[in-house]
Length: 281
Image 1 (cartoon, helix red, strand yellow):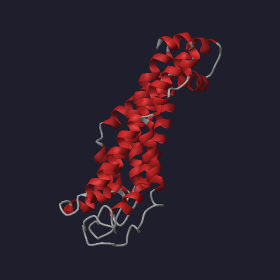
Image 2: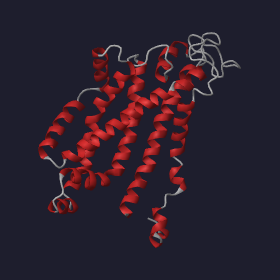
Image 3: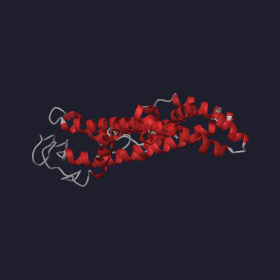
């Protein structure tokens, strides 16, 4: 805390503009992916140039394996990935938060959650996704989203439970118990508000992990299927022609990497600020 903040506590509570700078790239990327189909010049399944054609006036980033515009497919392919990753991050974070907060207050529930989480963590994500894809043929992106939720929740529960365990034995919890407060009040009104920074950081990590898991599934053709415009699917489809038109592979690869990095930076920038505001209250 700076000297100015000590002299004026209200200034310390005000968020600094530069704190939001790391958030801007993530917001722009998400907006670009969601609104991308609007400025797309061509349809995602209409050939406009030769297969793996070079960049030109008709196709700014050239053509893919069937001569379709790479830029148009890139603009169409981000919204589904972001929507799936956001669904996984929200569901996993919410489930882990509730389970973790209640588990530290009930020893039996805590031991049960711990054993299930320890067993589930041992299952490799790739193997789990492949098993679910085989058991649910035709599930597509929905099957991959469900697999990412099932595989990501146990690890997230352990993180929340580890952060909440010291709070369960704190003095304000004992005072609330002595005052006759119930388990729901202790979990949701006493413990949960003190985990805001952990939950926000966990949400960012789960989003990034979901982006990589869903992209990996798309690369293995376990989720979205051709001719759908998907960033990971574009990498797999256009790999054989990378020497003819590198943009058909490099552009979706850069988009996936920038999306994951920017969201992680945004979560890291916001989490410490939340912790500082909670400490000042």
